[in-house]
Image (cartoon, rainbow, N blue to C red; front, top):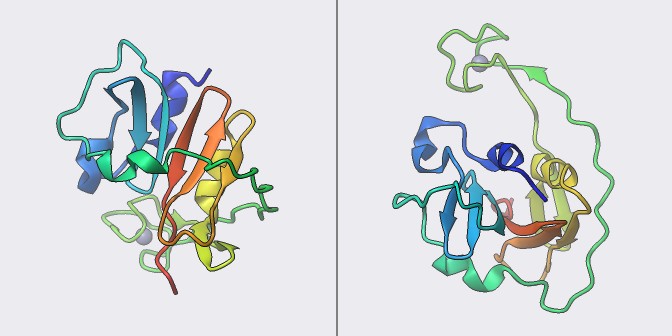
Amino acid sequence: MIELLDLSRFCATTPDRANLLLPWSEGDHTYASDGRIIVRVPRIPQVPTNPDAPSLLPHRNCFTDDGDPATPMPALATPEQKPCEHCQGHEDGCEKCDFIGYFTPITRIRFDTKGFADCYLHLINTLPNPQIYPKPRMLPAPMYFTFTGGDGLLMPMKPE
Ligand SMILES: [Zn+2]
């Protein structure tokens, strides 16, 4: 069972996604998303609805493995933090690095023609018993994934 505290790791952290800063409930589920990844678990009663949350309708039919077997999670390199080139690690007022002074370069992980950001695969890997279904030929559909206690979707990166 994924707890509320865990769900918050999937929420947005920046003001441009103010409607996604907290998990929200809708129907039978409680959701958390930063706009690129979304996870859902059975509805947690104390998590309220959010009228400003994005509509889930376009993705309703994506929450399925289509009967496909899971794809093995690829080997992922340990992410390396690098000093921000814009502020050289001096974070005062630097929006390029979200004021933290460093950034973590994103590696594109490919499944056929489809690419996903490695930072999100790392995040999925922190869930209990993660299983991924990238469905590489279904462009630009998100990757479906499951874990013990819930499931989710990950948007592909824009084509190069
Ligand atoms: Zn910076």
